[in-house]
Image (tube, rainbow, N blue to C red; front, side, top):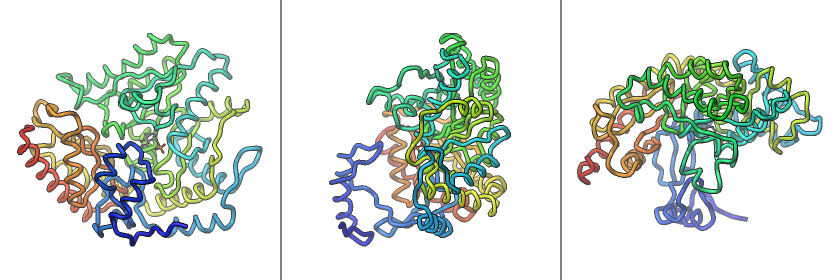
Length: 461
Ligand code: PMP
C-alpha cells in the first residue's frame, strides 16, 4: 500500500502527482513542469498548503464549502452513517432513511410547488437528468416534438456530454463532439462586457427577447425548456440587468416552456435567499442543485421538480438513475449541512453581515486603476479588470492574460481568487466574518497593485 502522507516534501508529492494524476481543466504537461499546489488541511475560511502557508479561500473551494471547513459534526454524521448503512441504492422499489429525510428537507426549503427531488452525484449528472426529464415530460403529454432546449452562451452547466452541451462554453464544445443535438444557445445578459452604449435596462430586455426570437426560429411546438443560472457563476458572476428575468419569465409562460434554474452555485444561501430563483423573482419548474447542498463535504446533487412535472414523470417508468442517486452517507451529510445552515442562521449572516461587508469592501477596491466595476449579488461577486474604466475596454493581450497574472499574485499573497478571462471571481464561505473580509481586501489590494505594476512594466496598458 502507498505510504504517501501530508508530511512528505512538497517536491516529492508534486512529482508523484504529475506521474499519475490527470487534473480537470488543466494542461497537465504545464502543471507537471510547474508543480501543483498541495493543500493539506483547512479550517474555517483558511486552507493550509504543504509549505505551511495559510491561504484565505475566497472561492469556498469551487463555490461549495458554504459552512466553512473543518466542521466535526459533518464527519461524525458520515462516520455514524457508514457504520449503520454505508451504501444502498434507491432503484428497484427500495429506499432508506437518509434519502427520505433529505428529500423532505429539500422540499421544505424549496419554493412552493417544488416538492420532489431526483438525486444525482453532481451538478453535471443532475443536468443530464433534466435533459431527459423535460423531454420525457413532453413526450408523455403527447408533445414529443418538444425536444429542443435553449440555453445561453457562456453558461456553465457541467462537464458531461449532456450538461456540457447545455453549457455555452465554446472552448468546451471544441473538444469531443459537443453540443449534442437539440441544444441551442442565445446570448448572455452580460452588460459590462457586451452592453456597449445601451443602458443596462434596454440591454437586459434585448437579451431576454433573444429567447423569443429563438423560439420563433425553432418553432414554438418544438421547444421543451429554457435553462439558466439565476446568476451565471463560472461565466464570470454575471448579474443580469433587472429587466432581464421578468421578461424571460413572461416568455416561458407565454410559450409553455419549462424553466430550469441551475441553482448549483446560487442554491442554499449564496445570494442571501435559499435559492437564487427567489432572489431574481422567477418560478422555475425544475432546479438543479449540488455544491452547497452538502457544502462540498460529500459529492451529491439533484433536481428539485415541481408537482406537475413529477406527476407526469411519476406515471411512467423513467429509465434513468445513478448508482449513487441518494447515496446514504452523502444524503446524511447534506442533511447535517442543512441543519447547520438553519440552526446557525447562516442566511441571516449572509444578508445582514457577510454580503454588505463584502460589497463595501469590493466597492472600496473599485477605486483601483485596474478594476472596472463590481458585479455582486449576495456573496458571489466579480471584479472585471480593464485598462480603461470609463469605456469598459478590454486589454489588447489575449483574454485571461491579466486575469491569470492577478490570480497568481493573489496566490503569492495567500489569497484564492479565481479568474474567468480578465475577471476576478469571489465566492467565499458564507460564514466569513468582517475580520476575514478585511484580510481578504488587504490581500486583494496588494495582489492588484502587484498586477498593475507588472502590466505596466510589460507595456500592456
Ligand atoms: N451548474 C453550475 C451552475 C455549476 O457552476 C456547476 C459546477 N461549477 C455545475 C452545474 C456542474 O456541477 P458538477 O461540477 O458538480 O458536475
